Length: 260
Image (cartoon, rainbow, N blue to C red):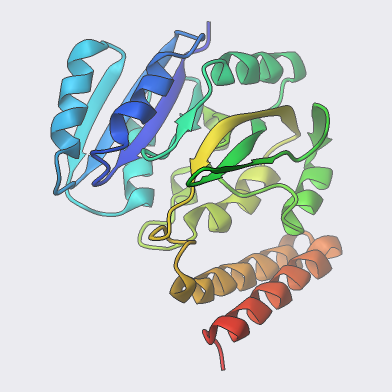
């Protein structure tokens, strides 16, 4: 069976970490390598990581100085041994059959990437976000079109990847919106991308998250411009969709007074 290496960047999430790791350990697909990368936590997160590793031999813990999420993901990626890679943010959690069903989809379609729907959870509110009403096989061109207009989200975490489709350069260390910056290049290396119609990933939205802070909307706008240039250079037939995204985010920035 293919081993899935699940990489979890950890930073000051002592109240959410056990829920996250338990949801991975309890997967119906058991051939997992769970890599917890403690990114210089100043609370008890690092200690919790070590305690969790004592309970499940599949858990590996790496402690490093604080360098940001992209660095923590890269550290886990470089230390991974699985042929398939998954990412889970440490304040989120996943449904118990996520990896079993998504890996089956990968094997049946020979896809390099499989992605699923997700639940956007804010307090007691749960909004289910699905790309399609049914499973869907996409070629690279179609997937890049949906990515350009944001119908396919750029989250690293609601996807699994064949390891050889990911490069060290996909991890934008020191940058905000790193998922948004790298996903076009990753999709561009694929022949087949498969969508699994189920909301397996539970994304916990917080006011103090990067995207939850209005001041960072300007950074998102800059990331959208970065993506626009990528489409102009690599996939110009869809650059108008990327431009539309730039304009929409700019309008939000004007409303928030992030741009003048």
